[in-house]
Length: 245
Ligand code: NDP
Image (tube, rainbow, N blue to C red; front, side, top):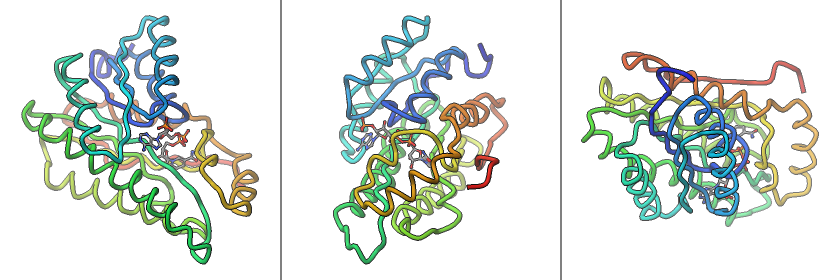
Protein backbone atom coordinates (compact mmCIF):
# COMPACT_ATOMS: atom_id res chain seq x y z
CA UNK A 1 0.00 0.00 0.00
CA UNK A 2 1.08 3.57 -0.70
CA UNK A 3 0.19 6.27 1.80
CA UNK A 4 -0.51 9.01 -0.73
CA UNK A 5 -2.54 6.70 -2.97
CA UNK A 6 -4.43 4.87 -0.24
CA UNK A 7 -8.06 5.94 0.05
CA UNK A 8 -7.94 8.25 -2.98
CA UNK A 9 -10.93 8.04 -5.31
CA UNK A 10 -9.50 7.59 -8.82
CA UNK A 11 -11.71 7.58 -11.94
CA UNK A 12 -10.21 5.88 -14.99
CA UNK A 13 -11.68 6.20 -18.49
CA UNK A 14 -10.84 3.44 -20.98
CA UNK A 15 -10.33 0.99 -18.12
CA UNK A 16 -11.44 -2.09 -20.08
CA UNK A 17 -8.00 -2.89 -21.56
CA UNK A 18 -4.35 -1.91 -21.92
CA UNK A 19 -3.02 1.02 -19.90
CA UNK A 20 -6.34 1.82 -18.21
CA UNK A 21 -6.82 -1.76 -17.04
CA UNK A 22 -3.26 -2.01 -15.76
CA UNK A 23 -3.59 1.33 -13.96
CA UNK A 24 -6.80 0.17 -12.28
CA UNK A 25 -5.11 -2.99 -11.01
CA UNK A 26 -2.01 -1.18 -9.75
CA UNK A 27 -3.81 1.68 -8.01
CA UNK A 28 -6.38 -0.64 -6.42
CA UNK A 29 -3.50 -2.80 -5.12
CA UNK A 30 -2.08 0.42 -3.62
CA UNK A 31 -5.30 1.10 -1.74
CA UNK A 32 -7.04 3.54 -4.11
CA UNK A 33 -10.81 3.38 -4.61
CA UNK A 34 -11.02 2.99 -8.37
CA UNK A 35 -13.99 3.80 -10.60
CA UNK A 36 -13.79 2.16 -14.02
CA UNK A 37 -15.41 3.47 -17.21
CA UNK A 38 -15.47 2.18 -20.82
CA UNK A 39 -17.99 0.96 -23.36
CA UNK A 40 -17.36 -2.79 -22.94
CA UNK A 41 -19.24 -3.28 -19.70
CA UNK A 42 -18.60 -7.03 -19.48
CA UNK A 43 -14.85 -6.37 -19.44
CA UNK A 44 -15.28 -3.88 -16.62
CA UNK A 45 -17.41 -6.31 -14.69
CA UNK A 46 -14.79 -9.06 -14.96
CA UNK A 47 -11.96 -6.68 -14.02
CA UNK A 48 -13.91 -5.33 -11.04
CA UNK A 49 -14.54 -8.88 -9.84
CA UNK A 50 -10.81 -9.65 -10.02
CA UNK A 51 -9.87 -6.47 -8.16
CA UNK A 52 -12.46 -7.21 -5.46
CA UNK A 53 -11.20 -10.76 -5.10
CA UNK A 54 -7.77 -9.27 -4.35
CA UNK A 55 -9.32 -7.11 -1.63
CA UNK A 56 -9.49 -3.91 -3.72
CA UNK A 57 -12.18 -1.22 -3.65
CA UNK A 58 -13.81 -0.77 -7.07
CA UNK A 59 -16.96 0.34 -8.89
CA UNK A 60 -17.64 0.43 -12.63
CA UNK A 61 -20.05 2.11 -15.02
CA UNK A 62 -20.56 1.90 -18.78
CA UNK A 63 -19.11 5.06 -20.33
CA UNK A 64 -18.80 6.54 -23.80
CA UNK A 65 -16.47 9.53 -23.40
CA UNK A 66 -17.76 11.12 -26.61
CA UNK A 67 -21.09 11.78 -24.85
CA UNK A 68 -20.79 14.64 -22.35
CA UNK A 69 -23.91 13.55 -20.41
CA UNK A 70 -22.40 10.09 -20.07
CA UNK A 71 -19.25 11.58 -18.60
CA UNK A 72 -21.28 13.71 -16.20
CA UNK A 73 -23.13 10.56 -15.14
CA UNK A 74 -19.83 8.76 -14.61
CA UNK A 75 -18.48 11.50 -12.32
CA UNK A 76 -21.80 11.71 -10.43
CA UNK A 77 -21.77 7.93 -10.00
CA UNK A 78 -18.27 8.07 -8.48
CA UNK A 79 -19.33 10.82 -6.07
CA UNK A 80 -22.41 8.85 -5.05
CA UNK A 81 -20.37 5.71 -4.43
CA UNK A 82 -17.35 7.22 -2.70
CA UNK A 83 -18.36 10.75 -1.63
CA UNK A 84 -15.69 12.66 -3.58
CA UNK A 85 -13.30 12.42 -6.50
CA UNK A 86 -9.57 12.91 -6.09
CA UNK A 87 -8.18 11.98 -9.49
CA UNK A 88 -9.52 11.45 -13.01
CA UNK A 89 -7.29 9.61 -15.46
CA UNK A 90 -8.45 10.70 -18.92
CA UNK A 91 -7.07 7.67 -20.70
CA UNK A 92 -9.64 6.49 -23.29
CA UNK A 93 -8.23 6.78 -26.79
CA UNK A 94 -8.25 5.33 -30.32
CA UNK A 95 -5.56 5.28 -33.01
CA UNK A 96 -6.75 4.31 -36.50
CA UNK A 97 -3.60 5.32 -38.41
CA UNK A 98 -3.50 6.04 -42.14
CA UNK A 99 -2.01 8.51 -44.61
CA UNK A 100 -4.09 11.66 -45.12
CA UNK A 101 -4.52 10.84 -48.80
CA UNK A 102 -6.63 7.80 -47.81
CA UNK A 103 -9.29 10.30 -46.80
CA UNK A 104 -10.63 8.29 -43.88
CA UNK A 105 -12.74 11.17 -42.61
CA UNK A 106 -14.87 9.03 -40.35
CA UNK A 107 -11.75 7.73 -38.55
CA UNK A 108 -10.34 11.25 -38.21
CA UNK A 109 -13.58 12.34 -36.63
CA UNK A 110 -13.57 9.37 -34.25
CA UNK A 111 -10.04 10.25 -33.07
CA UNK A 112 -11.08 13.86 -32.53
CA UNK A 113 -14.23 12.77 -30.69
CA UNK A 114 -12.59 10.23 -28.37
CA UNK A 115 -9.09 11.65 -27.91
CA UNK A 116 -9.89 15.38 -27.69
CA UNK A 117 -13.59 15.75 -26.92
CA UNK A 118 -13.39 12.81 -24.49
CA UNK A 119 -10.71 14.61 -22.45
CA UNK A 120 -12.66 17.89 -22.58
CA UNK A 121 -15.79 16.10 -21.37
CA UNK A 122 -13.76 14.67 -18.48
CA UNK A 123 -12.58 18.17 -17.56
CA UNK A 124 -16.08 19.67 -17.89
CA UNK A 125 -17.55 17.01 -15.61
CA UNK A 126 -14.81 16.76 -12.98
CA UNK A 127 -13.52 20.34 -12.68
CA UNK A 128 -16.60 21.81 -10.91
CA UNK A 129 -16.50 18.95 -8.39
CA UNK A 130 -12.78 19.46 -7.73
CA UNK A 131 -13.30 23.23 -7.39
CA UNK A 132 -16.06 22.60 -4.87
CA UNK A 133 -13.81 20.22 -2.95
CA UNK A 134 -10.89 22.68 -3.09
CA UNK A 135 -8.58 20.23 -4.84
CA UNK A 136 -8.14 17.41 -7.31
CA UNK A 137 -5.83 15.94 -9.90
CA UNK A 138 -6.18 15.42 -13.66
CA UNK A 139 -3.95 12.81 -15.27
CA UNK A 140 -4.31 13.10 -19.03
CA UNK A 141 -2.82 10.44 -21.29
CA UNK A 142 -1.18 11.86 -24.40
CA UNK A 143 1.59 10.10 -26.33
CA UNK A 144 5.07 10.68 -27.72
CA UNK A 145 2.85 11.74 -30.65
CA UNK A 146 2.19 14.90 -28.61
CA UNK A 147 5.81 15.94 -29.27
CA UNK A 148 6.57 14.68 -32.78
CA UNK A 149 4.59 13.86 -35.92
CA UNK A 150 5.11 10.69 -37.97
CA UNK A 151 3.59 9.58 -41.30
CA UNK A 152 0.13 7.94 -40.98
CA UNK A 153 -0.22 9.59 -37.57
CA UNK A 154 -1.00 13.22 -38.53
CA UNK A 155 -4.48 13.26 -37.07
CA UNK A 156 -3.61 11.03 -34.10
CA UNK A 157 -0.65 13.29 -33.26
CA UNK A 158 -2.86 16.36 -33.71
CA UNK A 159 -5.26 14.99 -31.11
CA UNK A 160 -2.39 14.33 -28.71
CA UNK A 161 -0.84 17.78 -29.29
CA UNK A 162 -4.29 19.06 -28.40
CA UNK A 163 -4.40 17.02 -25.18
CA UNK A 164 -1.00 18.48 -24.27
CA UNK A 165 -2.14 22.05 -25.00
CA UNK A 166 -5.40 21.60 -23.06
CA UNK A 167 -3.54 20.10 -20.09
CA UNK A 168 -1.10 23.01 -20.00
CA UNK A 169 -3.96 25.51 -20.19
CA UNK A 170 -5.83 23.71 -17.44
CA UNK A 171 -2.76 23.85 -15.21
CA UNK A 172 -2.36 27.59 -15.75
CA UNK A 173 -6.01 28.30 -15.07
CA UNK A 174 -6.21 26.21 -11.89
CA UNK A 175 -2.69 26.56 -10.53
CA UNK A 176 -2.22 25.87 -6.79
CA UNK A 177 -5.61 24.29 -6.41
CA UNK A 178 -5.67 21.47 -8.94
CA UNK A 179 -2.82 19.29 -10.16
CA UNK A 180 -2.47 18.40 -13.83
CA UNK A 181 -0.18 15.66 -15.10
CA UNK A 182 0.39 14.76 -18.73
CA UNK A 183 1.62 11.19 -19.21
CA UNK A 184 3.01 10.45 -22.68
CA UNK A 185 3.76 6.82 -23.45
CA UNK A 186 5.88 5.46 -26.26
CA UNK A 187 4.73 2.20 -27.83
CA UNK A 188 3.03 0.08 -25.17
CA UNK A 189 1.38 -3.34 -25.16
CA UNK A 190 -2.39 -2.90 -25.49
CA UNK A 191 -5.28 -3.30 -27.91
CA UNK A 192 -4.72 0.16 -29.42
CA UNK A 193 -3.46 -1.08 -32.81
CA UNK A 194 -6.68 -3.10 -33.28
CA UNK A 195 -8.38 0.16 -34.32
CA UNK A 196 -6.17 0.47 -37.45
CA UNK A 197 -8.16 -0.39 -40.58
CA UNK A 198 -5.43 0.60 -43.06
CA UNK A 199 -3.46 -2.58 -43.95
CA UNK A 200 -0.09 -0.88 -44.47
CA UNK A 201 -0.24 1.15 -41.29
CA UNK A 202 -1.34 -1.95 -39.40
CA UNK A 203 1.62 -4.03 -40.67
CA UNK A 204 4.09 -1.24 -39.82
CA UNK A 205 2.67 -0.97 -36.33
CA UNK A 206 2.86 -4.75 -35.81
CA UNK A 207 6.58 -4.57 -36.53
CA UNK A 208 7.08 -1.58 -34.23
CA UNK A 209 5.21 -3.18 -31.37
CA UNK A 210 7.94 -5.79 -30.90
CA UNK A 211 9.69 -3.33 -28.58
CA UNK A 212 6.52 -2.35 -26.72
CA UNK A 213 6.59 -1.48 -23.03
CA UNK A 214 4.35 -3.49 -20.71
CA UNK A 215 1.24 -1.46 -19.81
CA UNK A 216 2.34 -1.60 -16.20
CA UNK A 217 5.27 0.71 -17.00
CA UNK A 218 2.75 3.46 -17.76
CA UNK A 219 0.61 2.54 -14.76
CA UNK A 220 3.74 3.04 -12.61
CA UNK A 221 4.25 6.52 -14.08
CA UNK A 222 0.64 7.40 -13.24
CA UNK A 223 1.08 6.08 -9.72
CA UNK A 224 4.23 8.17 -9.32
CA UNK A 225 2.35 11.36 -10.18
CA UNK A 226 -0.57 10.54 -7.90
CA UNK A 227 1.61 9.50 -4.99
CA UNK A 228 3.39 12.86 -4.63
CA UNK A 229 2.60 15.02 -1.60
CA UNK A 230 -0.17 17.60 -2.18
CA UNK A 231 2.23 20.48 -2.93
CA UNK A 232 4.04 18.61 -5.71
CA UNK A 233 2.60 18.89 -9.23
CA UNK A 234 4.26 16.50 -11.67
CA UNK A 235 3.73 18.28 -14.99
CA UNK A 236 4.81 15.84 -17.71
CA UNK A 237 6.13 12.31 -17.88
CA UNK A 238 7.39 10.84 -21.16
CA UNK A 239 8.03 7.10 -21.00
CA UNK A 240 9.61 5.21 -23.94
CA UNK A 241 11.01 1.74 -24.49
CA UNK A 242 14.79 1.79 -24.21
CA UNK A 243 15.40 -0.55 -27.14
CA UNK A 244 15.65 0.77 -30.70
CA UNK A 245 12.95 -0.22 -33.16
P1 NDP B 1 -6.44 0.10 -25.65
O1 NDP B 1 -7.08 0.04 -26.99
O2 NDP B 1 -6.02 -1.18 -25.02
O3 NDP B 1 -7.37 0.89 -24.63
C1 NDP B 1 -8.15 1.98 -25.03
C2 NDP B 1 -9.30 2.13 -24.05
O4 NDP B 1 -10.10 3.23 -24.48
C3 NDP B 1 -10.19 0.90 -24.00
O5 NDP B 1 -10.46 0.60 -22.66
C4 NDP B 1 -11.46 1.35 -24.72
O6 NDP B 1 -12.58 0.72 -24.11
C5 NDP B 1 -11.45 2.83 -24.41
N1 NDP B 1 -12.29 3.61 -25.33
C6 NDP B 1 -12.20 3.74 -26.67
N2 NDP B 1 -13.20 4.50 -27.15
C7 NDP B 1 -13.93 4.87 -26.05
C8 NDP B 1 -15.10 5.66 -25.87
N3 NDP B 1 -15.73 6.24 -26.90
N4 NDP B 1 -15.57 5.81 -24.62
C9 NDP B 1 -14.97 5.23 -23.57
N5 NDP B 1 -13.87 4.48 -23.67
C10 NDP B 1 -13.36 4.31 -24.91
O7 NDP B 1 -5.19 1.08 -25.82
P2 NDP B 1 -4.17 1.76 -24.78
O8 NDP B 1 -4.31 1.18 -23.43
O9 NDP B 1 -2.86 1.74 -25.43
O10 NDP B 1 -4.70 3.26 -24.81
C11 NDP B 1 -4.85 4.08 -23.68
C12 NDP B 1 -4.34 5.49 -23.98
O11 NDP B 1 -2.93 5.45 -24.17
C13 NDP B 1 -4.92 6.11 -25.26
O12 NDP B 1 -5.25 7.45 -25.02
C14 NDP B 1 -3.76 6.00 -26.24
O13 NDP B 1 -3.83 6.99 -27.24
C15 NDP B 1 -2.59 6.20 -25.31
N6 NDP B 1 -1.30 5.76 -25.84
C16 NDP B 1 -1.05 4.43 -26.08
C17 NDP B 1 0.16 4.03 -26.62
C18 NDP B 1 0.43 2.60 -26.96
O14 NDP B 1 1.43 2.33 -27.64
N7 NDP B 1 -0.37 1.65 -26.52
C19 NDP B 1 1.23 4.99 -26.89
C20 NDP B 1 0.87 6.36 -26.59
C21 NDP B 1 -0.34 6.69 -26.09
P3 NDP B 1 -13.97 0.32 -24.84
O15 NDP B 1 -13.62 -0.10 -26.24
O16 NDP B 1 -14.47 -0.78 -23.97
O17 NDP B 1 -14.81 1.55 -24.77
